Amino acid sequence: VKTIAQMYKEGLLQAPRQARVKRAPKVELLERISLFQGDITKLRVDAIVNAANKSLLGGGGVDGAIHAAAGPKLLSECRELNGCLTGQSKITRGYDLPAAHVIHTVGPVYSFDSSSGAEAKAEQLASCYKTSLQLALENSLKSIAFPCVSTGIYGYPIEDATHIALGVARDFAESEEGSKLERIIFTIWTQRDKGVYEDLLPLYFPPV
Ligand code: ADP
Image 1 (cartoon, rainbow, N blue to C red):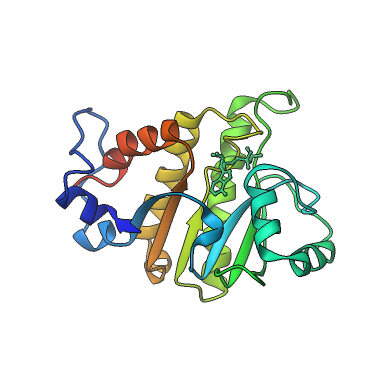
Image 2 (tube, rainbow, N blue to C red):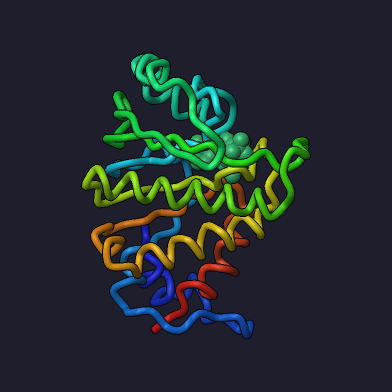
């Protein structure tokens, strides 16, 4: 898994051309953020994040893949948690996964749920990333890998979701408490999502 510092060096990421670029970060920050295309269940990190549903009892997409790879003990532990609210996160062990823990976060349903407006959904998605990062810190974890929460079955537009994910990660990684987190990995699965991350990462994490 390459850091974005390496990706700039190897020409896999280009300096941004757009105007809306954040001020340059410390070089150290570029060494703590990674982009990985592939199966999140294969990552040996302190925690992988699961894009779960409110029941926390498993589902399709990345949730199904995580439960399949972690084995039935994960579902047993999830049963004890009594579900989770949208925008909130809960942590379990990783069982048969190479990852030590799973942080289950519940993203907003975008396409077929009109109970809250676009702004509220953006807040909820930001909260998924914030509460997951916070849980990692509270449990003294050093590395965390996210999937593209809500952008699969839940239908959140990938560009908007990626702006939210990267904005939260930048603020958090730069904060004093967030500096304890040594590694944040954004996991993408599809080619389309890879292109979006390659376009937007340089806006939030421009080369030094
Ligand atoms: P949601 O219901 O939150 O939209 P999904 O599981 O449908 O969750 O999709 C979330 C993201 O996870 C999508 O970008 C999807 O392509 C991706 N995904 C699906 N399987 C995997 C996997 N094994 N590893 C990493 N990402 C995955």
